[in-house]
Length: 156
Image (tube, rainbow, N blue to C red; front, side, top):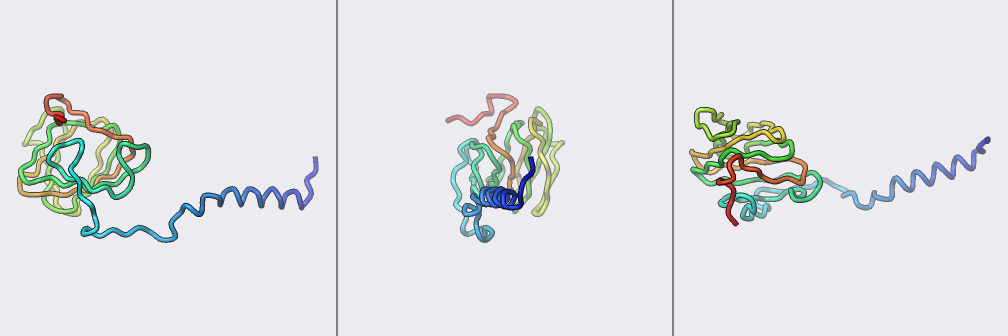
């Protein structure tokens, strides 16, 4: 079968129009958010922590970006998450260690501007002995927290 120029032009126009149909949903500029504009809420998964949701929601499918605030002297026992994550230390001193049990000798100290990755399913633990710390977490939901020892799970 031989296609003529008008048929190709019409098909091309239909494809172009259909590919642009979602264009109205795309913002015309990027997103800006200052620290003062962030809305902090209690963390629903871990008592005592604050969370500011920047993009997405960890309970839903898709990318999310959160800032999580840890109070001074906080220890979060060994746990894992089902998604790969990246972390950036925004403020304070953040200590991270990997393994099935909290072990202070395995903690690595990270200061503001530090970055690390956290593979899905890998147990880790954190501490903020020197004061409040804020980290920015990026991942793909749905996500949750799985404590190695269920005794450490947050009580609701």
